[in-house]
Length: 429
View 1 (cartoon, rainbow, N blue to C red):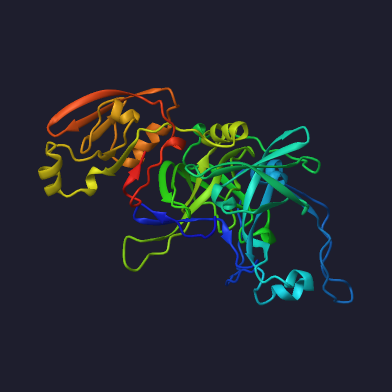
View 2 (cartoon, helix red, strand yellow):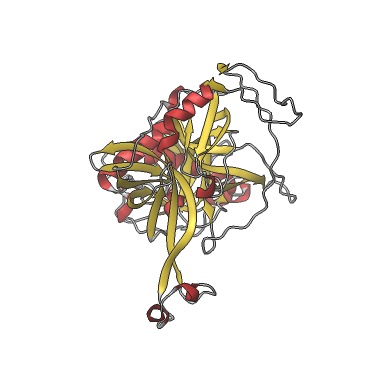
């Protein structure tokens, strides 16, 4: 997390929804208002006999009418709420801050270079597995970025220390483990491929941090398969084939579950659009949150549990979107047909890589992967990362005016390539 602003490659400003704190203190203006709620789902209530709220002496009292409201939403929330946790990211800070010296012994104050752990940020997570003495939690990678220690606050307020199992910056996911001794509830993943636009969606998490832990907001599934791309605080590419929802998610909700009306986790809340950068005025945006689909989450967390990391294949090229290149450059340098409007330009091919062995060269313009059209570096990366090391991939490209197709053997993984990008648009794969 380490900060709420994310650099985007789209026209909208996408923000991570973890919450960052300075020395454990957060400031902000909160406004509260009344809300009249009408449940559209199945709702029932039962009550006892009514009693007058005014006594014979004329004194006003509270009525003793009792009722119990049960709806689809309350039932869904009850199934998973106790599995939702707050995650506290502790990082090192200098010990010579203004207040730090008041709470340390003379011995600790003797060295001005000492450091101590303080709250850097807070987010949310959900317990999805209990195995023997261990329970596993999924959250966002940006929630745990830069951590020196992690603490987890359970639904009942119990605070425990967590161990980081593994992270994946590309999908913005991380897995933690804690002792299972106090874990009472484990969430169940639903099938995100079965989601329908317009169906109810419920977000649970800790907006603004653990002080507001287990907050529940309701909305709908606004859209599916939204490609949300950005760069994290470490400069790494983040790409999510996201679920869009209008359920209110705020700083601190990062890593918390998005559930369906059956109480199944169908997504992990990750980001929101707070304002549009398409105009100089920066129009404020409401109700545009994004979650990582549960089917993608399950694939990643299984690998993180096993290996602590995700191994992905690499081509060994740096590349650039064709649509970002001027028509003059396309005509004079690339010399591709004028009918080729979208694709990915290879800017460099590393020695000894799958791309070089397959015969790809600088200024080749990739237009298809395995017969499917590719319009951007984001789509190419997604197609590549859907493969495993050892797979093959057919690449169709233009070399000047000639269209060609080669088969690339993906024998190299990302970890052994040492390529860097000169900008967020010029990326290496």
